[in-house]
Length: 100
Ligand code: HEC
Image (cartoon, rainbow, N blue to C red; front, side, top):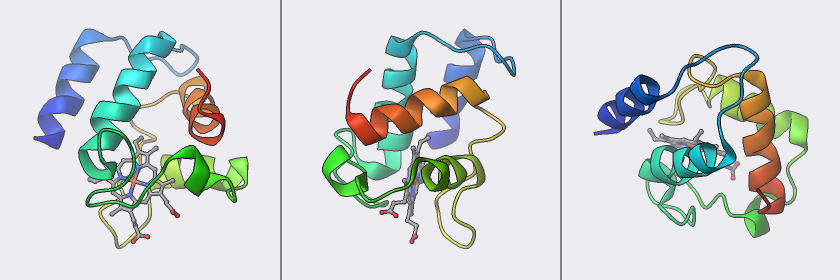
């Protein structure tokens, strides 16, 4: 299920190291793909709650690392192969501020 979502996502958008997809696409990605574990509203599921209120204590650099590298030994996967640097920046910003 998760893999299918990721494949659909990759097939419909070009991935390049410096390119950044449309914020609407990224928002959709966060809610669909991250949401497949963290819940569509990000308030938790298999993975923990990652709403703004909950992630406030996170340093942006640490959050970036968690997204890029995942959390070894848990179901949280590394996203480096799928997201460009500007996209990870956008997601970090979105998760910490709730603003697009
Ligand atoms: C396959 C399931 C899965 C997917 C997909 C997933 N995560 Fe996770 N994530 C987890 C799990 C499980 C944990 C908790 C790991 C642990 O036990 O520390 C986690 C932990 C996290 C944490 C740390 C939360 C905290 O309170 O410390 C963040 C932040 C996070 N994920 C963000 C994301 C983002 C952003 C995405 C999408 C790019 C994503 N996750 C996609 C399963 C997933």
